[in-house]
Every structure is written in structure tokens, then in C-alpha cells.
Length: 101
Image 1 (cartoon, rainbow, N blue to C red):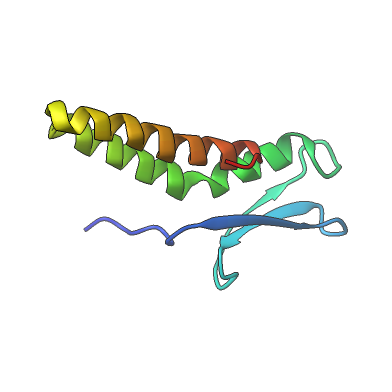
Image 2: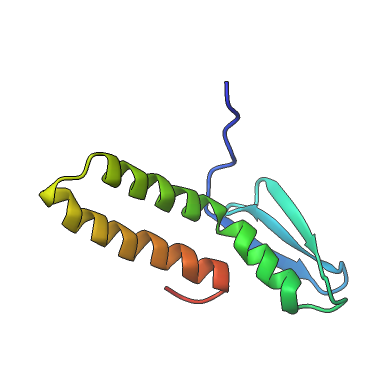
């Protein structure tokens, strides 16, 4: 039996005094991970790493959607596949980069 991950979306927050970013479930009910500042200040690689971790559920969903479309693709699914790639990957990439989709 494989373990299931905490459902997304996951969010990044931080406390300047704590020296790390928290990744939690969107409703803040569950802690997922802590990422410490790699350069002893907010921002930088620590923030980029935290954003990438927080985007994991969306990236997984995008991958599953893509693989499903490839496996079951026909002419009708090709258009759907392009839309799925555009929507899912654009949103996941934007979240990982800290941008708005």
C-alpha cells in the first residue's frame, strides 16, 4: 500500500524572527515542511525552494493529467491534452516561481 500525500493546495508562509519558511496545507491545519533560509535572510533560494515544495501537489496533478491523456489519446484528446498542459502546467509553474498565473 502506498502512502497518500497531504491534499493540496499547499501554501508558503514565514516569520522573519524564525529564520525559516513553513509549508502548510491551505487551511493551515497540517504542517508539510520547513525550509530554512539558505543565505540567513528572507527571500533568495530558501523562498524559491519553499515555493517549489508548495507547488508539488499541482505539479503531480499536472503530470498525472498529462500521462493519462498520452495513454488514452486520440484526435479528440489531443486538443484536450494541449489545454491540460496549458492550464495545469502554467498554474503549477507560476506557483513554483511565486508568480500569478
